[in-house]
Length: 359
Image 1: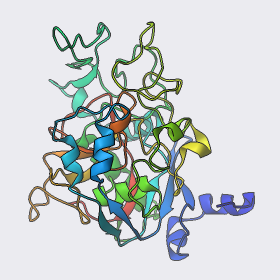
Image 2: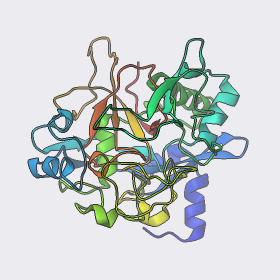
Image 3: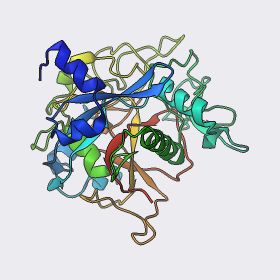
């Protein structure tokens, strides 16, 4: 969708209630002022429907030579037996990108919040710099380990953490705290209509957003061919690890995306945005949603561990990450996280503005 500059500026600067009252079109955007010159851009997703989950053919590709996911595990079964029509009944605004380091820093500076990894006894899963390979024929050595003293401020990259990177090493608790801070901030400023809140997307909202408005059951938002993903996403590809002459082992994208670890949010520009204009929906970092994990598949309505108490003890993450194989960066991929305090340098989140669902 194209806008003249004056119209685009008016959309970004107009109050959110006015935008909602005007029945926004898909892809319209607004920048939220976080203070100190930091903003967060959200994009409007109208009500709609999509096919949730994956086909047997897609699962077979994901665990094949090109997809590279491990065959014989239960992971692909988490996507459900077959695609099913799923509806998002109310429009919402979703972050153009994952929440960045700079945006999360602004939250911490203003609120004084301390993340789970930074609390006494806290730790986060990060890359182990001394790792030199899996050694699959002798002993399996994984490249990630829990480390105290590391956090979103320093995820152990081996290079400086930049404000333009997606924030990682934050827990489900931390992500929800960011949403509550932004909700309260916007309410105090009189910019948030009743019945709406900033929060993690529901699982249905996330997959609807990831598919970019398509009603087909596609592997990726652009189609079924991983080769067509070149210049669109950051996953395990032909990129040397920092200071080494090795790439990540196992299956990988057959090109260089320029980053062995994270890339800046929206690094790929227009080509990296889907039909809704959302960036980095496949690859980059795992994105948490608000639902509790159901191993049988995702749900149209928000799913809780206990529906009466509305509790979540095992959150869901979606979309793959910079380290993962192509088969794990599809629209339908979903995993359960071990706890609400767990954090990992491959995990981040995307905020949305939608109907109130939090307790």
